[in-house]
Image 1 (cartoon, one colour):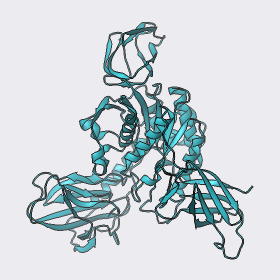
Image 2: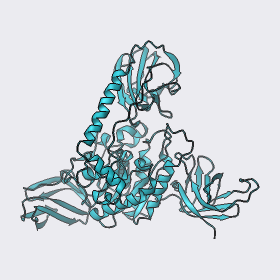
Image 3: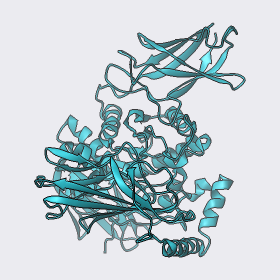
Image 4: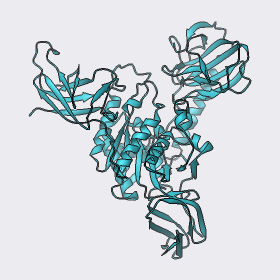
Length: 600
């Protein structure tokens, strides 16, 4: 009897070079038949068998037969492994309000979406999942970045695209590494040993559940006797851990056309919305990640007065709504703004509730559960969008990412193309520091990963949102990843990189920053601001101007009458949320960077 991994199944996409494996009885004959060709091998002493196939043309559907096991609807196409954390696995349903007109059913795109989970006691042999075409519910729940990546590949012709999605939100780069690598890092290995100790996870989870239950039991909110007072929805002044209730009455002379969508932007931590006493939606947003939006059921609104009630609970943080999001009742041809004044009252102050334990940043967890079972397939390449969970340790990122690339190439093919995404701009709403170095340092570590052969980096610095770690613009990210794939893997002579810093020189008070790929260099968002870092560690910021394919800055007078000393490094875009972006004539952005200054 033939047993195959779940991804060798009906509807699958394989590349022109494909590896098919499985198990049967030891030392038995296994025959694979496809496209009229027959290949015969003998399984090993453990019953494992493996076929390595080569095809000359794309196409399908085909039928593959392995002994008496039949796989239908097989396509030969462009196969990509898609890994990363939440910005890679963010579903299309969350970005549809912004990009709905760009999201279309496309049966040429087929997706294997691996079951998400964690495992610490060694790699799994299989992972649950199945193939879907990008139609119906499968489209709505599929991941946005891989979808737009696939749409970009289809610009080059009607070739089936297969996406192997193995992403998991909240994962660190070390979570994608095997134990044999993690053992070389004592701090990481200690974390692995800790989390897989018998009962450790269960104890932490039970402790949190007990604390959360006690916290919620003590929360006195309904009919607390406090009066309502007028407050702008986004004004959280004076609110503390606990709950807040917002109430607003809107008058409708005529009912708006359907569908009507309630957009509540993003809330901390949980929000429940009622209209005319009917619960409309409830979003548990403990991680501050999920957008609050839903289509109102028919009959929810009525002519005349309609009461909207929002009950907001903040446990780990104080209750509040996040700025720069949409707060409205939206309908075809118009909307009603909800970001203005409401009647508000708050509960008694509660102590902060410690957050739920999170284990997906621990080493090996998703490698064991999700990645290890699929390694061995021979994709055309890998796209990777990850790094948010490593912003606290940028100094180790390049080394760990290098191990990840080495692992992929050892198992999936020598010199496998790996295209990764540099982190988008983001400003933590709880951060009190105006300019932070947490995110730019990680972005620079990612830029340094370009020294790994046959890698490319999609720049997303202009795709971020100020207070949302999951920006809606996944379309641009996917398209930029596709540009690199089309150029690196499929030989298209197309621009894929924005301006790339090549050299920084100092001549007295004058600094010149030279770029490659900088034809038509221009700045968006204001004047380019660079940061000079002196050998004594002091930093100084000054504006630069675009001159042909360079940035030029004159520091004369910026330090008073003191002569400008030699500068060690120059930085650009060196903040969590930089306001200015450099582009070339192809409207592709330059990545933020840090570069040593040449003084010769």
